[in-house]
Length: 242
Length: 227
Picture 1: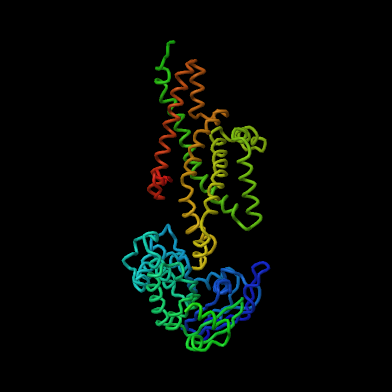
Picture 2: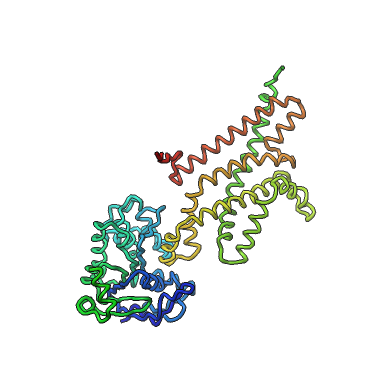
């Protein structure tokens, strides 16, 4: 069953043509890794999927629902798609528990007690239950990113999008975040991850997508991508970062 | 020079009664002014041309005309349209509208300073604009602008003395009345100044307390010294 279906998506920033007819698919429960040079359109594509960016043409379906700018539908869609940002983007004025419960209380209208319970379970999943009463500024980057993941999990999403989740982290903090993501993937969460963590991709990804100059140049399982990349660009890129 | 301090001291309850009116007017104007300020700031940052236009017209009108003339207008000109307000009502109406306009601009600045990433975070959870505004933008903006908002409240308290011009019985008005009766200008105005001063200091303390308790803003921040 298809969870994500991106069909011939084009996107311009002014004169700049950033996405040049991207099509890709992800089955339910699969983990996809998007990679490529900076400026290749990876993050833009990810942001288009929950309409943080508009698209100029093409269609995107999430669980057979068309992604549209129509407000009520869009809010429902976004509530069902988790988004983990490069800079974590926690709410600095709320406690960790407050961060994880806000969406439940405001969007899902979950009663306070129940929201708290769900949030604590989500925080336990990422190993941070004991930090529930702390504030974001008291946590390390890796911990903040795990809270951001818990914030997504708590909403019980159909899919989670990760926009370079470890590139703002100190090297020694990357592992803990990838570990949480690996667990999620194994539990059957559908995930699309923009990342250059090739070790993570090799172990976790079902599919990899190589973007180059706004086009999807190559896709396939990690075994193919790493062993025998079909295109010269992909081969060179993988050599450069491994 | 025979100073007769017993004149203002004997009439202290009379003067303090005026100060109490000032304080009451300020209190009500702050509550409604912040509400108006939030709505005004929403308009000023709105994409809707109509809402933006109305908010901008309101803010510009009240910020770019003299407070005293606004008061005269409410008291002397509105009766032309059969709107008869007492001096106190006129004063309150104008104080709310005037301080609401200034607060709109302060709150707008705070909203614009909120980082785009936190706002996106809210939207990505499926929140509507109003929910993002209420739960993310406003609390973050309020923390950033609590100090200038406090200054605006104190500045309004002091400039509210012009309402004495339409015989609203505030502290200034009562001081003038007392002076007319007794001609003890020096003693009366020294005491009046002292009352205003204590009133402002009192507000500084209250606002400082709120800033610390509600917004967690330290009273004095030590800046690093560069060598």
